Length: 596
Image (cartoon, rainbow, N blue to C red; front, side, top):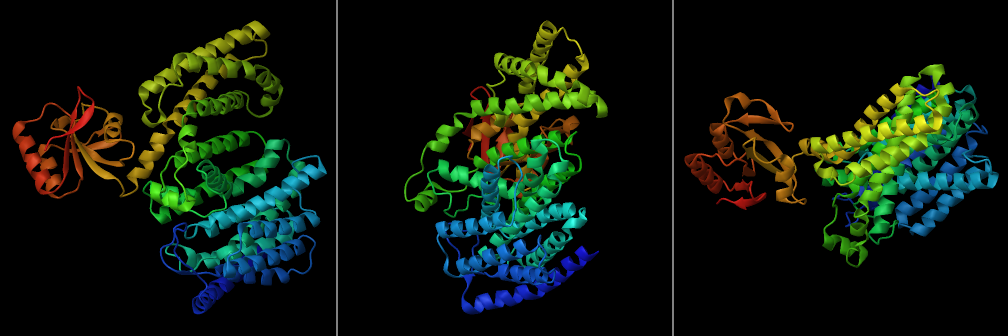
């Protein structure tokens, strides 16, 4: 109950103080001005972080000098003061790093530890890296309206749930509740379109505090959780979105020959907008991913084993694939990138993409054990899993090698993710079946199949096929999902359902052209209302002419050789009059050519 009171008081105070900070920022000229490497397009007030810091520190002082709260207050005041100076005079990246290391060192002095390593020196250095990394991650995440504050609210709520369950940590729980309330009050003015930014004062404060609180939450029950995976996952998953964004941006900037500390419009949120999402939807997508990571973190903290590794591993792989998808999105024109770098685009990224086959093998090195572990969990539930775990470890190398070799032999690494289809799934099915049979034969030869279950291999084959198909189809699925929820792209209406496939049509337009398929036209009355490749048959020839007159599409693709000459002339005339592109798919040439 007291936690709710602290949250409510902080929310109300921040709600009242933020407009005051906004007015002062405008009065004295402390505004963020639009730049090439920044996303916003109009001058926006800074110092929103001042409201968050003032409310948080003010409520924190009411808790007294508790040993678990005092370090948070001291370091928060340090980093907020530095952030305020940075907002006012814009310090160098190296200076910001020194300030972050100083605050992290102070937390180390107060006894904050990750407790990931037995070595005190190693764990201290890893803790230092964790605090500085998370602090900087939230600083980088503050790149779109509401993103940083909303993500901090989600991650902080997950950490607060864990703190509430421990009476010994009532002080940090109340402090965190105040921080979250202050952030929520600020977020009211920071959602799209934002009238105020938090600046470095707020982003550094949020990053440092959440990094520190995650160490408190992790340390409170680290001894009660078994396994390194559980200990590592508990603090990482709630903060996975800022970690993901920072890793993606840093890697791509290094590969493109830019400094990681240099600003830019190449964050995950910007890439989501580049593929067609609106700013609010892009931010909401990252919020949902943060919430998903937080939910899995709660599972880890509550169980530490069982299905938690499967959920965590699956989510982590999904985030990696999502990152690869975003990395392929073009966010800069060559001229803009050259202006940012002062030189032309380095070919490192292009060369790196040719290594995708290696990346596929590395992905399968994760998918195969994940599927096999899942099969054992499904077959031996509860207390039965423990006695059978040695057999899982003993046979895992056999299964891993057999499946990889089988997939290579059947051609599983020759396909293209972008155009993954049913025949590709059939190829994977052949490989999985061959690998499963081979693995069973080897286990029979080596261990005489003693204490092994045949049903485990059947379940493993099913799960592995689903994982392989899902990961390979992910690029196509994500692209379709995003495209159907945006107004971006060329609106295309396809006449004929029995010609070339959607993949062929998209490939003929070229990879740089974003197509938004409106639907199909077919004169067969039995096909009215059915779906082809996920898109509906919206009408017949008469409907086609009416759609063209209303200018509801940008392009018509003739995907059949059976077309009435009179209808074709009518379509040509309407397209010419309404400036609609008309293209015919020459099936025997597999290319597009202009009709008019």
